[in-house]
Length: 338
Length: 292
Image (cartoon, rainbow over all chains, first blue to last red):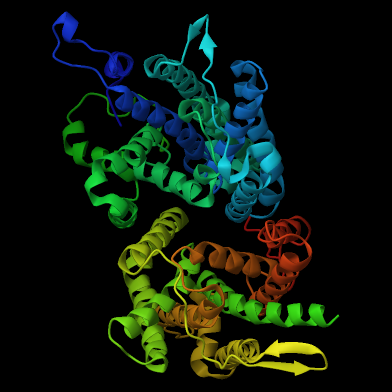
């Protein structure tokens, strides 16, 4: 989304304030807003966790131009790592770091052979990995509990405050999301991130300018996967029970769809895509089992008419108005297309 | 030893079916750079066309099979090409990848919601007779599958190699620009590829459904088998897809018997990773020169 530069920071502050206050009952101070209920807060937290994983996919797909079909598996690696470590009595902070690191290392191990060959091979290797990881989650009962899953994953406490309450945990996840968003923004803005984009736009020219194509694509994939691992680390204490199903191939494919629906290569895209993916099943409650059918049809229509996603669509609709504004080039959040 | 031979024959039978799906997959890739992530669903769905023809319209099985193949060629070939691929082909690889992923979800959910979420028994084309030759018992159904699948593959190879249209299709696959200069109707050849892919997928569907039952979620494992077969054999070779398919079928069956049933699915995938590590062009493929 393009917002004039002088409005960028105030706009960001307003969004941040709204997100912080979303679950709070404001009727006490004269604003007729009752705050989100327990379930609403849970859905908001789920949205943030999904958005973290989707940000990773966006880095891989939107900025580095690769395809990953294993983000849910990385989520699973993070979720199981965290669940097992927390259950063993280790602190959450350590488990969170270990989850990200584990996903990063696995990302390097997967990406290295695949990217040696050809870019599209990463899609097939991640596809295979997705199924393999799911088989391990399901079959290694001594470790993962198999189909019975791991129950009673406790939520951490921070500075002596327990995060058991939904609202507290929501704020905790919101803070982590903000930090991870900032890190990604920095990566995308840094020479590193610009190298990613150079790769996507024109790999031959990027290489001739001295960018190590293989190293950069590999790093993009590993960092994106680490975001999946960290999202998984938050997902486990959020739902407090994990089983292999959310980490199968299907959810990995949905992550790809989500990022493209939001707007691939646009910084805010994952948040929009995750909102659609998390909220659509809630809105389409009346359609019961048909929501995936409707979602898939909408995605196909969108690819045909507006492959730049929802944000691209909004931009296109706002375009005539934007021309009258002073400086349309200064954008709030680093966009893919320079 | 007799057990081993039996496993090999059963493996070749399923492998020949995987090969059908893998050939279609490579053909689409060659002629139009379409990676069809819905290929598994293309194999899952025609069985449901046949079931609908039988249960809703009361057609006999033989007619239903023909109806299913015709419907598949129409919907998964013509409509897929015109409605899904055509508008997206100019927008690069990613939108098309996303669209075929969405299509796979659509077809899977569609089969579940429209027909049934339960696995459906599917009649076999061949009599259920078991022959015993030198201690090895072979079911006639497996032989039938092998004969039909290989018949289809041989016919396809003959068509591609010996007919004018087939040669034009090959020219299109190898170099569309030069083919167009030489007067080949490139667009029409690409359309033929889509029709052939749909027909092959429908054949595979009719052959595999009596073995695995017709179920909406079958596409995932079938699609995976087709991908793995195509890459293991050599992504840019029809011959490679045949070898890859047979190999995956046999490996899959042996793994189920000798490794463990819970990790049976993992063995072909590990094979895939090894191939990508050590022979990325596939068993029969030629190394492609780098684009850079």
